[in-house]
Length: 243
Length: 268
Image 1 (cartoon, rainbow over the protein chains, first blue to last red):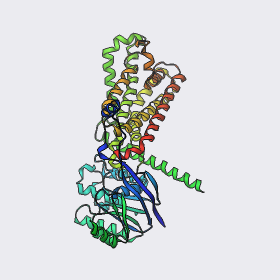
Image 2 (tube, rainbow over the protein chains, first blue to last red; image 1 turned 135 degrees about the vertical axis):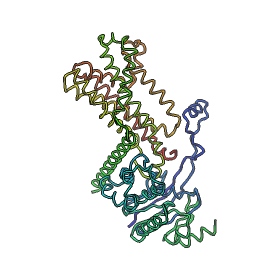
Image 3 (tube, one colour; image 1 turned 30 degrees about the vertical axis):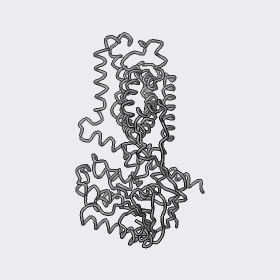
Image 4 (cartoon, one colour; image 1 turned 120 degrees about the vertical axis):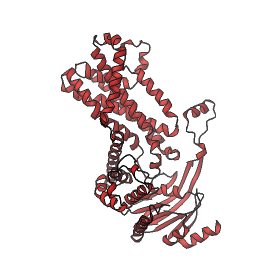
């Protein structure tokens, strides 16, 4: 079954230098007649991608080549300027864990908050709270505000919430290891469980040997264009030859 | 069949929006009142102190416009302050809500409008627990009629609509112009002085009055005062006037928000 389909997806974004975050300056430049439309840059150029259920896709490329942007398009965070995106199934974004936490409220409240932000229902989260706390080894901290946790604990909590349920599509953006050694192993096991099951995984990584081992299809992006799509070994060696 | 599927999809979006609203409002309120002794009732302190201050300074002078009763002046000042306080607090908080959650909307797909809406909703909750009972008791004592108490809902609804509309507008403008808070402070101050809060509307010169009528908060303040203080049945004209203003501002704010929404992501 086809889960993700991108057809000729292009994205133009405003360039960072053009940010004029100032009402005063903008009004002055309009009065002086110097105002001009912000310039835009092509970030993704006519990307085609079809992902079948159970496929593990790796995306490689230099910094700024549009890898994370592509993941954002697939997650529905960004809308393409042209082209179509079709996604079937629930996506779990595992991008920078803990972004949705509020340091002032308790761990328990944060489990509800973060879970609902990720798209689960409150009822579901209440039922799963215990298993999440257990996995994160934070049972004793349920009522402590998150600002009272160490950064490792926060990362553990984020990982546990995002991965408590098997998503249809898992998106990994350079986050595979959090916390101390023993927790890292638990993370790896859980990720491996996803890998073994029929989950569909999209992973952005600079760890080429990891990508080569664990993905069956690799896409190489360069300046927003697809340089190569195909079998993992070939893609990685082709990439290494040209860099 | 296709129709059913589509319907179902929309329903899910509504449920998700509602769930998000619940957790975000709960978060706002918990953060605000964690460990504070009087909780929500702190929000009453500001209008009460201001009312006292205004009464001490202007009460004696303006009492003649209020049937020579200082008590009437106190009540008029209080109702006005309650309205402007709600407006300025909720919209200022909504202003920074989209930008403040910028890193979040870059990581998880969320309906961005939830952030200003949740700020307004948290303030509505706080208002309903803190100020509303007081207002309802005042109304009942003055009018001795439950109709008046129930009709308070309409001008308050208008206030919530105006605040939500302005909240949409300023929160989206703030994405583009990060120096907006300074200008917005000025705007709130102008609205504050131009709505008859601590002075009687009668002292305003005739030539200036039409400009004051542009202030969407004036009909709301007037309607609340008429219902709370006059002792007569609610005037439907005032109620309609305030509701109409509220709907127009909400539509305006929502349209701007929708229109500018596609550009947000490049700037957050």
